[in-house]
Image 1 (cartoon, rainbow, N blue to C red):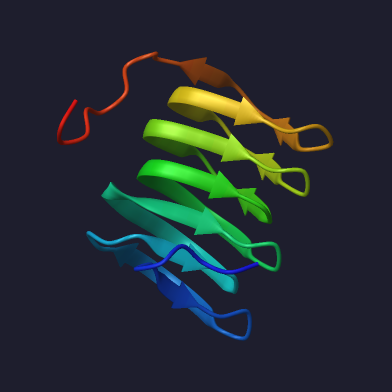
Image 2 (image 1 turned 45 degrees about the vertical axis):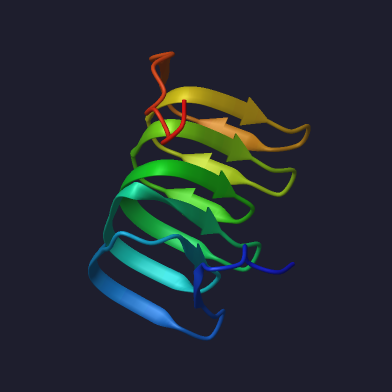
Length: 117
């Protein structure tokens, strides 16, 4: 799987402990423990990723494992291999067959407007 063009890539051999924030799209395929704040960007949790963090993002795509609470102001997608353990607040949610989620889910229905809408 390839990250979206223009995304920052964190490879599967990388481990990050602490707070991560930024304003560009991120493809995470390693291990992350702490918090992630990407309120204007998309986070993709790759198939090899193991994330133990609270996430504050615009959009989230999960292929790997996320342990923590998630707040997505836009769209959240759980792909086939996704495992999420934690409470979720999102404007929109898409769950593929075989993805798992354990926690409370709240859908706000209010997506952040993108330029041109």
